[in-house]
Length: 233
Image (tube, rainbow, N blue to C red; front, side):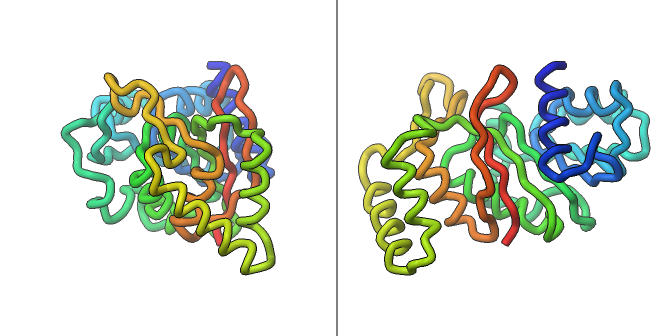
């Protein structure tokens, strides 16, 4: 439960609402831990929607959670690790999250299992469901997140000088055509058990998805891997 409580506190601090008071929360790849933490600690969320590719998880939550603020939906998306018989993410038109937008969207241990094409697709699917002032929080495995040359690329991508930003994008495009484009599936015998990204490549994928700007890249600790906090744009 310590990791779940760390995650709920992270969400609350990210949107500036102690204990997520009156917040509308979308949790993609929800599992059961965040739900349990919110209910056990009696957090005053206004609405929580949990989505997962594991139908058995959603069935269990629907059976055991009797609180009108909480609802759950199955998304039959292909994932080599958790749902190998699902539909490719690129063929899914929208998330089963309803029409009302959310204050915060979280994905813990989801991007850690996504290939690059699904990384971008997921970001595009999430964008319509966040309020203009809302925040997106997701964890991911990053390689050398404090590397010096990656800092240079990141600063260049964010430069106000369009020529500097263009040259950085061109360099990234060239690098992505090489054999190691900033992504590695670290356990090939178990596909997408650990999807790891170089920071520059993760940032490039966020930019490619459109609609997002990166506010912060958080360091790993005993409760979470690296995490990104993004705002809609």
